Length: 367
Image 1 (cartoon, rainbow, N blue to C red):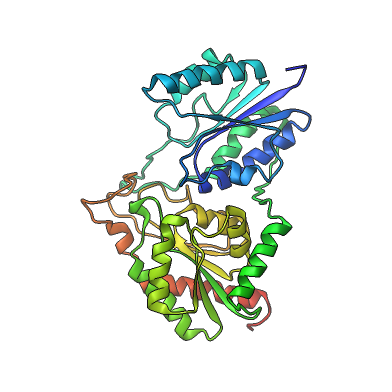
Image 2: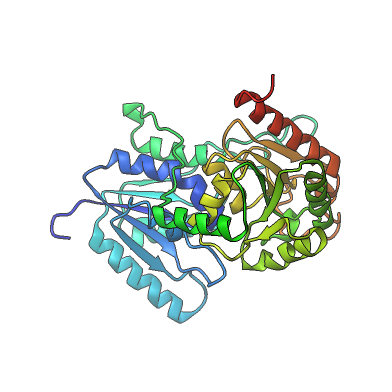
């Protein structure tokens, strides 16, 4: 394309997937400062968060290619061939396959990108040193490196001989516009500077990740009762709004429900102002961690420990590991979500207390 040097980056997923890929994507930009970076992402249904909602404002990419995910439809395959033609015209000098792992269609994608699209230098398509479902002698799942680290390893593969060092940079492109919107939200709800704002994320698009709502309500009730300056703010997507309304109905006007009411970056700015976040394993949790808000993260045992935990040292992850751990179920009916139900309200409250104590000590308010 007129002598331009292109690098193609392929990333799928929604909010959490995009956030954990930020360090890898920034490392690619640093490695190829003079190249055009092209982002390849799928078209998402209207209720899902597109990676571009975050990456677009970061000004990392010079071009975005949208594609319709493959299926048996003839129309879809027509779009795949049109996409292949666009990629061939780009002639990317490097291609980074930052897809979720393990992914059952890697062989298909390898054929598409390397043969149909003619991509030569690809990274992330040729196997991985990460082995899924590894267990110890007793059958317990082994701890897994974070997804952010796995993706960075793919980028390091491209410059292995240079021993590239890359920071875990989760910086989000929060602008003055987002700050202004959240200032307005704070004023509308009469939130004062000296109040403790606890972010809550009681929802998840995946049923197997949802801790019972009545337990979130009990945690919030205790905080509002024991802390005179406490407020609760509910985060999530539009599908989580009814959960927030139920919490508000039960707990009263000290609950502010913004689920589905803010953009991704407005949510990030609001979370940045929270003293702590309490919620399920979701993209909102990763968003809170990205802006430096400590998390009490409530995890099911469906995946390896470590893999999707919020990145950083200031978080507490609560997780049980029954013998069915690693099931990868999206809906758990046979065991009735035993791993989540074993996490009790008092465990969450104790984790909140430990984080608050650490914050007060760090700020010199506690001897």
